[in-house]
Length: 110
Length: 123
Image (cartoon, rainbow over all chains, first blue to last red):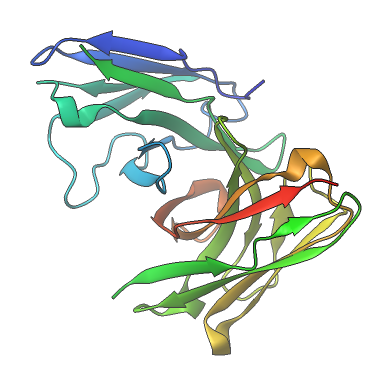
């Protein structure tokens, strides 16, 4: 069981907006920044969002993220078929003295 | 080209040992913290270990503490993971990942990943 909780799957149709939630604790999301990664099955993960809501160079503006208290969320607008991936939230946990990942959310574009 | 390339993954018996390597190129390796992250078959990502740029500070996941040792050789732009007392649950693809962000582990994130090296622990 992961320290950060994500829904196992979400789905939506092309063009729609979808959100993926990530629930943590005070010692993780509550006091440390949240990062998001995406991964095509069998490939290496890629950084998607860092420091709660910052997009690295090259990441589409359609991806945005926010954080409130001990929860965070990733939003993808104007959904496209190429957005189908597994998405992971992550943060440092001061109680565990380690980096923790959510269990991952599989996004399906219907 | 900026990249990380892992090597050393293999089939090993339970209780055995293995040493993974990760070679960095195209960037100043010694200026970054580094991490190992693993992914068991069909499962999610699990952080394994962290080492600061100088090698002075390390952190480990509870699941590997006392069995795994992370180290680095900045002169060779290389990261290592010595894995001892291997168990079936250590079977995974192991990725090395470059850390960026502020100076401590608590605010860093992984901006560059290798392609991974598979480790299978089985008799």
